[in-house]
Image 1 (cartoon, rainbow, N blue to C red):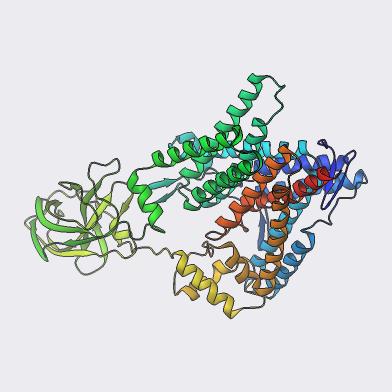
Image 2: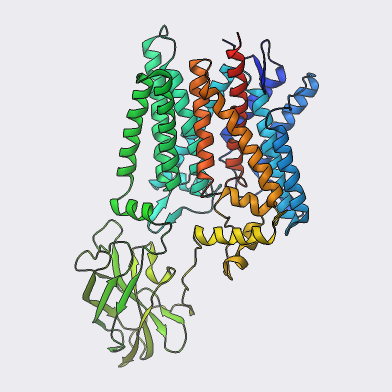
Length: 590
């Protein structure tokens, strides 16, 4: 077997002593997989129209260190690899699109990220030149994934010290409806999920290697290694579950299924296969116990929360109350959403109201009394009840807007498509001792969150309008509002499809170059799996293949190429596919 210092590049494997600069490359890649998730919110370096984040600065330092080491040691880095020309073609197409596109500065920044990803890929191919380094890098990835997963779990549990520390990397905790979507140090839970999905797949390969380890090693050491790896895998899978990302669940299942099928094909129903089956069962249990059945049902059967919290409220058209008095008002409420209203749940639903000015959509008093539902109200059910109402302390004419609150989480009136119900109110009698008056402010308007269908149609129209060169990389988010018919659109929203994002950004030229890159990468990832040379290489190559499949599948519903925390591990996976294929071909040689 070739040791950890054997040089393996592209289609050629050259046995012998490895170069000293390759060690620098390998150490640099190990460092990058560790720091990639921890990108500070505030940039480290700012230029006119451009900036560099903390991870981008680390990335530049690592690449520069490798190139300086190669120059000083007179080691010519290998750059002619199976993916080099497709990647250069992709960079060239995106550069032309950026120069000709809509926002040149923004697009050029994205081209710079693609170039940095190419540097990470080349470092991986140069650094991973043997089985030892391949296994070592994946071990570092597993450690990094376990750290991120632990932070995500502590965030979900609401540990205050962790929440405070994580504000260095993202502004707030993400939620969907009432559910926390843990993301650890990542700005978005889907980005955290993609990173964790990659290291999850890689960690499974490392586990199989540990199971197949030399039987002459002490049994206690083997058991400890297997136990640590299983614990890390389950921690990572729990974190993917806590991100509440549906694609993450699918890709984890896909990684387990792919590795299990390959394992049965190569070795039959052996210990490795049984371990994969046991882990699959434990992860299924994790998923089922991670949230309530209703939360899982809503998340798995709907795209977003837009239809979860809706109500049709029938109340008297006019009410008359005494100033400052508490009275009951009959109301009839129909659950026209998908969530069940339960006043005794961990996060309860209650009926409430808001006092508005009579002739303007301005708030007089927002926080009304809460009234519990007499029983659970399932979707489609109707309940008639009496709601407690406290009148304003000043007599006059008002409007009484009815609402439902899920305690400290959301008001139904703030949800898209909310059906607002208002009663005209006359307050009589002398004024009473007033509470501290609230500042007059407008009634919050329901927000809009475009679904994937809207975003994809906008991307298709944008690509049709700019077929050859596109609008420039990363410019979709700056332009989709006009195509989607959204006036006040969120410029942070991407197309939610990696392939459409490339097509709209780089046009047909960028799309074809990207397809060429993906095709060549797929061939390199699959070859050592179909024609394995060595059990350890076969297991690790299968894990790399599973990670690549996870990226490809999740890319159908999200876009990751613009985020430092994901393009670094994606570039590393591509480098591992090429390095693993070359190593496998070398070991196959007589």
